[in-house]
Structure formats: C-alpha cells, structure tokens
Image 1: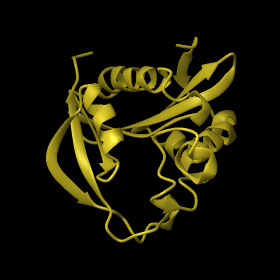
Image 2: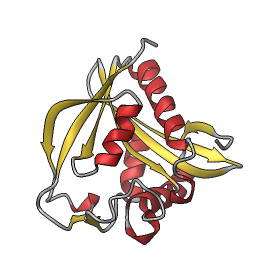
Image 3: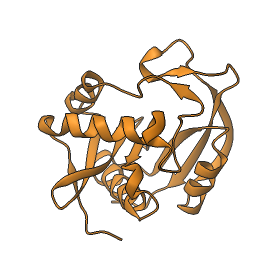
Length: 178
C-alpha cells in the first residue's frame, strides 16, 4: 500500500480529479485498470463544471487521495436524507488500482458520511453487468438490496451507452455512529 493522505478537494484540484475520473472510467487508459466502464460506455464520465457543482453543494463532499502530493484518486459522497448517504464516482489512477487506494477512499468517505451527514447507512449503485466490481464492494461490506434502477440513457453528461440493456443494482452498508 502506498502512503496516502485523504482530504476534501478544492477548486484547484478539479482538473486533476477530472483527469483521474476520465482515465479510470473511459477509453483505452481505463483498460489498464480493472474497474472501468470503457466496454459499456463511450464519451466523458463527468466534466469540470459538474465537479465544481459538487464542491459548491453543501450536501455533497468530494474527497481526494494524494501520494507524494499528486492526486491519485477521488470519491464523492452525498447526503440523501437524514439517515442515508450515497457513495459515487470512486476513481483511482488505473496504473495504481488494486493497491488499496480505493479501499482507503471508501473508508474515508464512510467516516465522513457518518460524521458530517449523520448517516447511519451508505448506498451506491453499480451497473449490473459489472459483476467483479459488485463483488469488490461486497467484500467491503456492501450488500445487494435486490433493488434495481434504470440507466439514465438520456443523460449524455455521463456517457453514451453501447447498448440499451444497462441498469443499476443498489448496494447498501450500515455505518457505525459518528
């Protein structure tokens, strides 16, 4: 495991975060890692304006992982209601995946969700066809709820699907009180 610091993102971090998210999720660079969507979706995963909106939203937090000062990963948490937070857009530099960075980002996000939002549970959605990623989250304590949600085919901000048979599964994990 590499030495990491995890902290809230700042506006000056957004270009580096954007680069990490795009590299981790889409295109040939993503194929260097194991958590990509490059075979399911084309186009961008996010943009700097959307990341800036996250920073400006009091119900969301954007965390970054740094190694030797460089941003190597990020994750978003969002307050859903008074008891539940949402974890999303977990991204780790594809060249550094499978080294514990994602695990540390998840733990920091869960702790922040409990401490800052008072969340007693955290949920996420994963494209159902990404079985290896679902198994990864299950090893982190997340459980499938049996709920599925439709893929937002009309939202071009999150990419262009190669097929029309995508949907999300919902996973949830109980959090310890802050």
